[in-house]
Amino acid sequence: MSDVPFSAERGLATPEAPCDDLDAVDLPPRDPRDAMSLQTAWLRSFLAVAEKGGFGAATLVLHLSQSRVSAHIAALEHALGVTLFDRKARPICMTEAGELFRGHAMTALLELQRGVDAARSTLDNFVAHVSVGSYPSVSSTYLPSVLQELKSKYPGMTVELFEGNASTLEEMVVSGTVDLAFRPPLPKMHETTLCHRTIWREDIVAVMREHDPLAAQASVSVDDILGRPLIGNPAGSEEDGGGFDLRHTLGEAAGRADIVYLTDQPTTLVALVRSAFGIGVINRLALRTTSTEGLAIRTIDSPAACREVALFWTRRRADAPGVKAFLDAQGRAPLPPGVQPIPRN
View: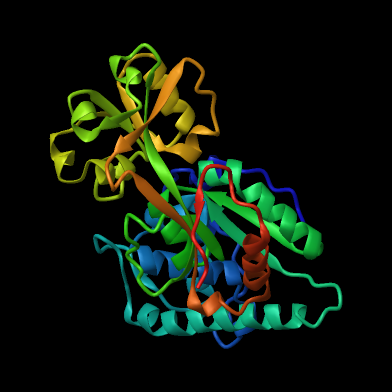
């Protein structure tokens, strides 16, 4: 198994202008009759731009620069001898040729992946590749034990790791950037056909300075924290799930909350609490990724002060050897301390 470092920066694309000048691209000789001249990377970029409705949006799921995505589309159009996107439209849209080609390109990539998986499954020494999405608290406290189980039983497997938030992780699974992803079931997924396995339930807690008056209590109520500045996670707009754990815990009272900061990083949330910017509301597992010295952690008296964590994958990848192996390893890996396991059906 390859040792691939976690990096939030992997998901960042370099903002470059689209490259529409074909003379600036090293293009193969054009032969529209020869499908073998097409590269799978071109097809992936084409499908991502078609799905997201633009070059910039496609970079977020492909983890490529905008100039690279533009070059892939230009090369594909040159090889096919047709224009796939109307770049004068805002937002850009597919031409008739693009619409016709889209289904064939998706089928070709799916069939090619099935062929790769089928061929690898015949090897005596099991070899497969799996790409996995995760987020900081799972990456730090749980994913290493799953990878250890995977390595011990399937030493020939290679693993590629990506990190993101709830919104971007869903996009990664749906687009095929990752085969599986750890993610809370809430906020709800836009894609409702994904397979999933719910793994555990964990508390959402309040974090405050140890000399805060609320620290004298064994637990705090929603009313206790509503009158205070609040810090939550993840970052982003409410529509994108920003501050979801905080809003979910407060329920109908969330509209009256004074939410001063939202962040993706538990270390940042803790630092803001320590600097007296407010009370943090975050899942307990995330706090294990950083030092909480000098802070008090209190349970919140709310039936909504908890969340579940699940593993998601697409139906079309359910039979892939790498996905099956990862699910097997996840089922055998010990859960992080302090969470409540959810029995599998």
